[in-house]
Length: 258
Image (cartoon, rainbow, N blue to C red; front, side, top):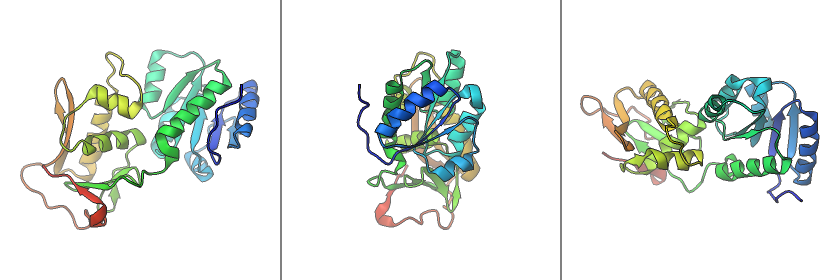
């Protein structure tokens, strides 16, 4: 069966030592005209960044789950897939919460692996910022789709990809309450399992990072039993945004008011 068609120009790396999988997968990727590189060790984030990858496939038996989390934070635009031997649910949940886009259990068919990579790339639009999305200004924040991050003046909040996507989703709702299940489906791409607290965990991370760059404002508000709402509300009265906080071109900025 021929592999599905995909746009050329994709750059992919694989961290694994399974020679059989590497050989078969390499034939599939050659047919797709994808650039590919194989590592038998966990390369540093700056080494991966220099390759300008679209996607990375990781075997955590070689790298450890901490590596998956570090790469997800350091390279938020990278499509990250984990391919691993049968593992506990806790490991799979940790990887997905930590920034992995997908988890595939070994042994896996190379055609399925390629299809999952293609699905991740479609969701991420090859890592390019959606040009039709405007910068959102709220309180002291500038939410920048072109950089997948949030800024106060020139200072970034250094959000991970999933943290950014969740914040942008909440902000784009323009004050409406977003249910946890809806947020999970739209950010993670799956139906939320009963008892899954991923959205709550990422909201806590978001709040901590936003408080560091904008301590005088509160942005993400809890509606208990339902979900979350985004609104820029000053703490203890009005706060003047710092100089440069609204430095983006006026025509390209959407202002969110209380």
